[in-house]
Image 1: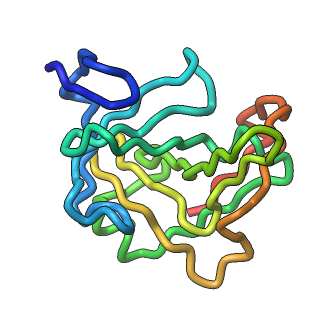
Image 2: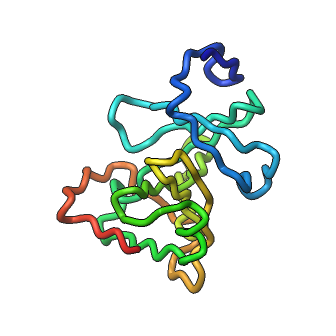
Image 3: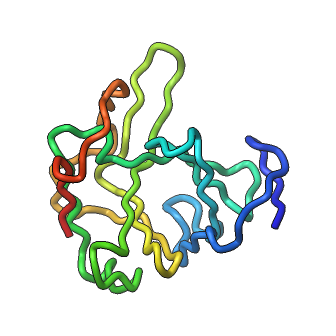
Length: 155
């Protein structure tokens, strides 16, 4: 399938990679279908491109790559049920990045991660209730990748 995007021009996508956000994303309730586009092969950052709005692209990242102190994602039961997630292995977690102008720090929204059911292609931005995280966490972009043992994903 081919799509037109403002950022990438016309690109070929694999329809099996489409992620459906049945509730949209906050501020964009009408845009429900997105495709992840790699920034660099196997890197921690990618783009989440809307299929309905060629101009809408989010920059998202694997939070576990950047956080040496760990990142615990306690997803509420109703969100897990809505995404039909029954095991941790089905869940993929990303955070939305804010890329600021030259010389300013990049931040991540750790308080509302994007959770994707990799088996069903369903996604949702989840608000972490009573979370110690905030929406403007400054990233250390020089961080080294963490090993699986160093990462802690809570569910």
